[in-house]
Length: 380
Image (tube, rainbow, N blue to C red; front, top):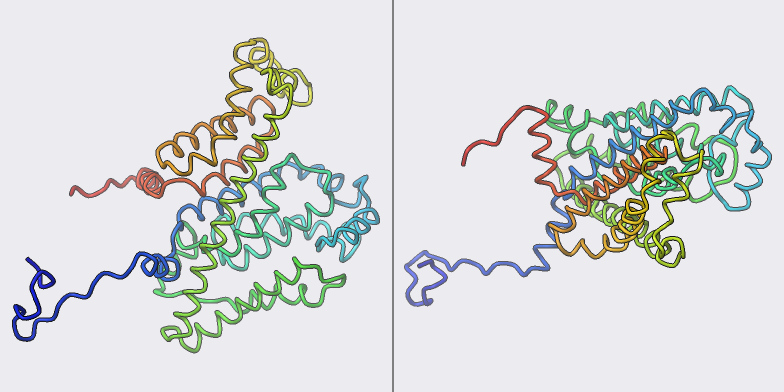
């Protein structure tokens, strides 16, 4: 029997009744602002997006000038005209010439690697966002769909606390006991943003907001690292992190839902023959023998066609059931790996697998961490 089970007259002197538990909405609000949920999922998305974009740029390095540079059929004049028309943002159009392009392209590779490693993640994430958006907007006709996902989700990923775990920043914080800012780095990166020529579309204002937020964070860490302003910033960062993760999840759901329901309306998807055609196109057959083997079986093509539609349409509804959702995540990963091998779209597939990681269960990620580090959970 606890003190709350006793009547007020039965309480001994000095004994106070236990306060009632807070309502559910208050506990949810406290978790939303006081804790960083989904840290491991955000870290996987960060690592995946950084490595995929760096690998894509390295794979296209021999043809970089034709795709995005001064030798591209989509000339600087055409790119500038399209950017002015759709109010998009690209640092590459600030200056013409090969030197500026080479600097931007190789900076994009370095930023992607540093972002994946989690080194000065706020700064490297902002550079990753600026360079990725700049190169993709320079030539919007290059890509396989994965670049669109990177373009969209990178805008939200920079607002998450994706370096809380599995990053060099987390390792440095654990050793030093607190975060240490790098004002020299932000000053170095902020100069070209402020002094660069060209218009100020909304992505440029977004980058400026990131720079100002980093400056405010550094000032608070310097003046009152344990005071109330730091607690307020932490609460705002947690809320922003959770909102960004929700938007990333909603974007992934929207991708699958629209893809699935559009397929339902197609006659080739309805009769189960849709996958027969890409498996017989030279452009999508990196392994002709394997594609011929898969495309030569009518039953296999029928099952893969209908299975793809069912997975994509059903995925948003399975989020209500944790076990079923986890099963579909495995099936979707297998589907993307099949697309990577059979259709020759590895970067699109890896991008979608990395985006799907936002729905992975934390227990599974912690289990993978223990397996990688060779640790086993302590006996209960």
